[in-house]
Image (cartoon, rainbow, N blue to C red; front, side, top):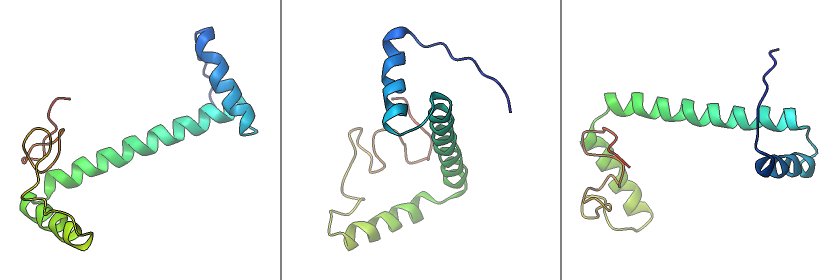
Length: 100
């Protein structure tokens, strides 16, 4: 096990301390759990990008259309995100993350 010192401003220290207390955890265990969540989110995003890079945009849109139909929403080919593509504001049709 490693030792890590974390410096919080006083204004930020009280909230995680209360959160840990409300969950019946030590500050150490709370930070450990938060780090685990952050790493899991990162790993999930990296896996998504790896799969997206090897996938087919057309097949992805077909699957989204199937989901839209199943949940009775407008098909993804006709709906568009805030930047004018059906993949939403952060993604282009090439599967590359755009700014924002």
